[in-house]
Image (cartoon, rainbow over all chains, first blue to last red; front, side, top):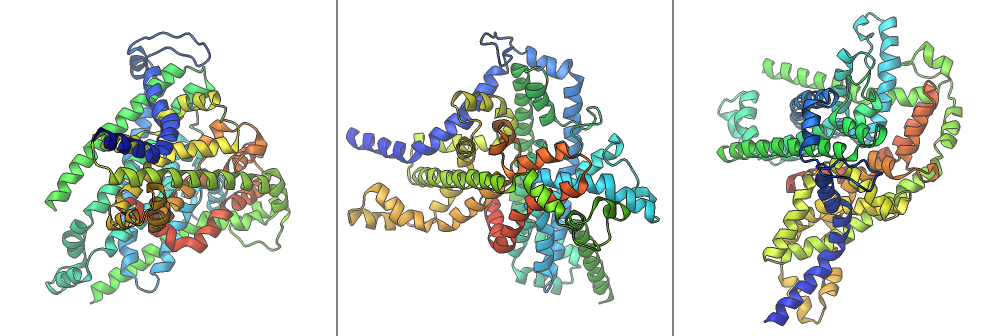
Length: 294
Length: 275
């Protein structure tokens, strides 16, 4: 018996080993190391560093207005993105699904922006915002288009949202479309015969059937929105000043472009991680409960 | 009946406007990339009167197109190959083994999917430097293997459950070793999920920006995205050149999209719903 279980472990090791080695070196150890450094005053260069307990966390949340502002800005972004991305994606999916002949065409068009790298999308839109829209405003009656879309913090938030949506809605739309195809046609017909309006049928027949997809898409958008970096980097670079700086950018700046306070930057990244965990946990709990009820 | 018609018109209108917004930036990038700077500033929206491909030949050199594309391809191919190989082995075994150790390892892989890249980026940069994998395209590819196996294991783990155990038992009776059974019998059956994983990882690795930015310093090693980023920073106002570079950078994925659209969409839907 012992020989057999010994053999079993060897075989498990042989199969899982390669994946685990890469995973441990590049993901597991860095994760743990990041948490460890967050309690130190390590500056990345000096081999000597000491523990300073929760000092980094307290400093980040109490004495670092830039960090707190970036955190609040990110939360605002997350709120907008989670709601808008899901509403738009679901609307598009339902509308496209209702078409028969043009379904493929619209699906192709709406998903295409998602293929393009986020950073390239941001560069394309920089052109649109800084050059094209002001020119259109000048030549036509649409004067409202002439704004400092990128330079004015009042508008740049919306510019960031627009580009993020443009780039990201297609992905969620595909997931919703797949879920909608799983709703049996007979149920919709039954609802129609019973006199339900299209909206009622959607609300009471379709929605409960796709709650699983809604949970997934909320999870994906929530997680993705907290990690936003490239759109902001490409569009505003966090500016003007630090007015559009998101949390990931603040961490990057702290670690690589400012004073190499690795320990302090690690503490900030742990804060980000914990926030994502809490939000994800709540979201999954709430929506799973809804799924069961539905 | 009239109300139905009105809804129909509304839906069509909504979709058409959405489609225009969706395509507008791509259209602008393409048409303006073949205009001269002067023609461009007289109107961005109008079609070009004459095609100027100088922007392209200039952008071609400036982003070192062939070299950058090759780098991106190397990173993607090795990265995806490594992920598929490692994760298929591990996902299969973890799915077939019960017991506390196996469950614990699987949980560890899954839990790490929630870790944001920015939380590991600082120690990862140090680690890569210490192991001398930073600064090279191959090193970059290996890091992608480490970061990508968790999701792939998750997908393989789920998929393996749908494969009957009898197949392996039959192979075992016929004298196949465990590895032989895996590579001859199981791995070919995993093809659908392998395609899904390869697609998802290709889109991720090819379009990724931050990891190459942190790892690569030598511009001859730059990926396509990184080269274009550098060009964007250097030629701030030369829009016709920048747009040509953007179109060139977006082109490979658009071509792949044109050919594999069905697989890509299926891959995304499957990847999400299995999750």
